[in-house]
Amino acid sequence: MYIDMKVILLAAISADGKIAEHEGQTSLDWTSKEDLRFFVEKTKEVGVLIMGRKTFETIGKPLKGRRTIVMTREKGQTWDKGNRPGPQTPPEGVVEFTSEQPREILKRLKKDGHESVVVAGGSSIYSQFLSEGLITEVFLTVEPVLFGDGIPLATGFDRMNLSLVESTRLGDGSVLLHYLCQK
Ligand SMILES: NC(=O)c1ccc[n+]([C@@H]2O[C@H](COP(=O)([O-])OP(=O)(O)OC[C@H]3O[C@@H](n4cnc5c(N)ncnc54)[C@H](OP(=O)(O)O)[C@@H]3O)[C@@H](O)[C@H]2O)c1
Picture 1 (cartoon, rainbow, N blue to C red):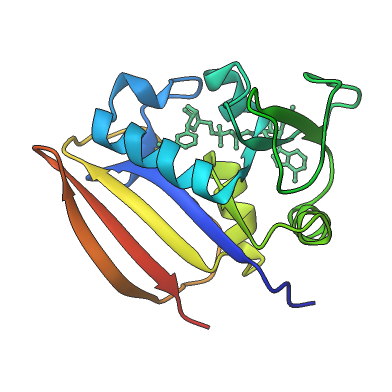
Picture 2 (tube, helix red, strand yellow; picture 1 turned 45 degrees about the vertical axis):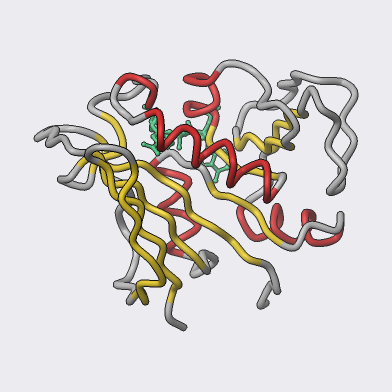
């Protein structure tokens, strides 16, 4: 079933397409302050993010003013008992753990009144949303580094053509690419 929502994949990548050098590495180790500023602005504008449990662990706390949905297969994880679903997120932020699958999460967010959502990684989460054809937009910050080894942006999905909307130089060495996914 088609879900009428903007589903935005947001990632910082090395120039060789990796999102981390190794599992558990925080992106703050290697991404630019301009990328962090963009991440904060975009996720605050959208108000709700979906991420995997491992990515959440690299952040380790609620993101202020945003609703964070953390995907996990472990039952009974909680962070904030004061969950208030819906587009109005309290200033301290909200974290919700769920074992729901991508499409179910989107349906629930749509029902709660969200018109858009950021898919914030990691690789396993990007891969699942891409392979189910759920992503409608992509923002990639290409950072000026090659990792060689590392965790790829995503794997195991069919080719997807993108239309470039905008490319913006960020600071001294990074480039922000904004794409729309072609149907
Ligand atoms: N550069 C960037 O923009 C960027 C963005 C995000 C992340 N990262 C990096 O990517 C790395 C983490 O990526 P990752 O791929 O290893 O892990 P991940 O996608 O963040 O998390 C994987 C975990 O998510 C849960 N999960 C995945 N699919 C699920 C499903 N269908 N249903 C329920 N739960 C599900 C599982 O948690 P349980 O094990 O609890 O069941 C799984 O172990 C970190 O180093 C992080 O810094 C980089």
